[in-house]
Image 1 (cartoon, rainbow, N blue to C red):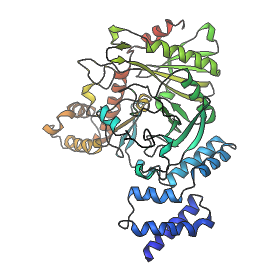
Image 2: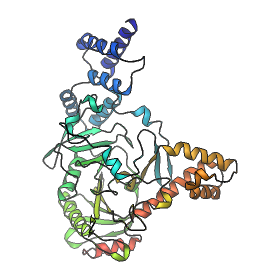
Image 3: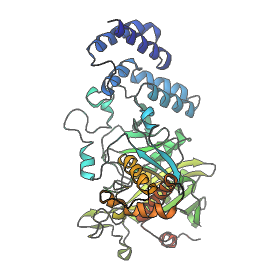
Length: 451
């Protein structure tokens, strides 16, 4: 009993110091904890038990929301700094685990190995992993999950948003892929989609939080990295490599004199619309979106719709800079063929040992999330190369990596990182619907834009 009392005292003291627990409630919560801790298994709390403890010690959702907006009225960044820090301290954001994920820059990209979540090589299984069988919430990101123990959401906290005049909310991802990775979620459970209202809502978010980027996955299987059907966006406090990329070509049109349209110097097919005028951004992005979702070029393998359904979609992402709104539209296609059953514009089979999962919004912007199995597999491969041994049969899928790392030479670990950057760049090239930048220019010229 003495050990349990000590643990309860330590936890409530932690909550007073870090979770804004009112000291006047400390005795009450300590006694609530005692009852729980006496029934806990083992000295170390499981992840589920930790969620339960911190769910009890955390401020209630209304208190979180009030504190957030009190800070927001002073400064938006102060509000997000506080809220993100709170979600780390109450153990919803698993930052200690995230910090252990290998991460490095190579070939102009950021590469991470995600040891915290399983690899979903099959889109159907990935979707099933996020399904909800009945109950009060239609999926795992519905707001109705806040505080729900059966899904380890006891310590989840969210804050209100208004985007496009609609009720949305913001929460941080427990296993974020980049700094302050969060999701903006529609309070209504409706399918993901991209239309003119999407561009409006993304800019509403950027107006509220100009220090964050925000983007939307292409709402089609295989090219929308998210396996969730619920309307939502992803963003956060890290400017990704694509946002820093320059322009190969700059085009204009007379009726939109307050905007420029750029063909981005990027491996994927990206059109960036830049203006300080929100209405202009909405109009141009809507026109490009409409043209692309109905666009065909069979010679390039682009067919917007066939017996298998619709194939073309846009993935938009926005940042605010001194130039105004910079809305990047990533043109995507999920069409398949006999040669490429996983997608013509998906990672090609020779790269599947590195990345077979969907190439979604985050990868398309230059941050690659690779499966956790690679840490051990590539570590073993490095040892084989260092020992100058032939490639064992069990590593046959890694023949490309083996040969190219040897060709790079020098320090094997550094050569492996270089090779991963090279492969991820080639995967991005696979996703490009227009392999030549001049083809993107012609696409825009058909809409009346001139160089």
